[in-house]
Length: 140
Image 1 (spheres, helix red, strand yellow):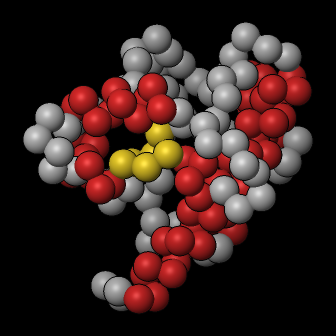
Image 2 (cartoon, rainbow, N blue to C red):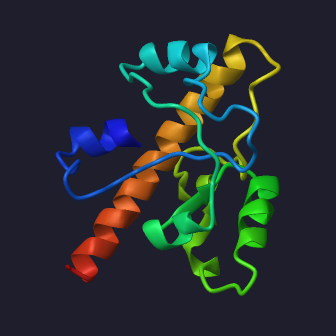
């Protein structure tokens, strides 16, 4: 997403961050296999893993989950349902793929990471279009 934001010259207007719902990889860099798949498409992955927190509800306008399990974990942190309208599945923004959840490629081979990168490009393009349409309808 940050790659597409930069390509659209919107880095000063849109902030995108990534966080997991578990603490398994906190502090770790992006998975080497995912970094390779991204690099093959001209994208350099940066940063280190962090865990999603309740504070993220206030910090971000949209919260995107890769799958239904993560969606449920995120919603559990919003016990009052105050921020429920911010939480979406990433694949809700796909325009070319029909998958409803991003598959976890962790235990598979390179083809799984390639599929996920392609799926995420589709979803991120759709998300950026959605953000731009909403911004045009409701300018700051």
